[in-house]
Amino acid sequence: LPLCAKLNHYLYINLPEAEYEFQLIFSQLLLEFSKCLRMESGDVSTSLLNKITYFIHEHLTESLSLGDIAEYFNISKSYLTKLFRQHLHTSVTVYINRIKMDYAAQLLRTSLMNVSEISVFLGYHDPAYFSRVFKKCFGQSPSKYKG
Image (cartoon, rainbow, N blue to C red; front, side):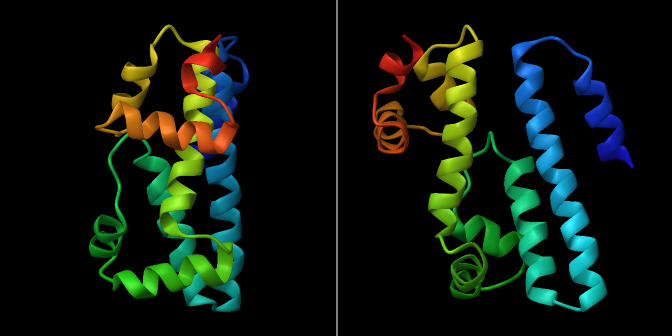
């Protein structure tokens, strides 16, 4: 219910940043629905994965590592890696970077923040690394993408 209220709130805000927030909350809502369905079917690993992906979305602006996430959920790094490989067919790092890069692209298009500010905002301590990851995702540097 709180996610629905947030979703409704961002639906009527006419700002570019609101579109990303709407998409993020909608994704969280879908994850919650999925979690409820999985809990009914008793699939514990999928339920845990939903909690982990929700956690990642909630901490998007922080520097997240495989170890940090595993420790938070009191599971081993190898089990966390296995969950992502089995259910999402990707690694934890690739998943986190993709979500952060999508957000970075949104910020580059809609905000007044420069590349370095966006890099720090998204938890990347090295703007050069941020730029390499961005270029790998979008085929061009963040500054060129910003135009």
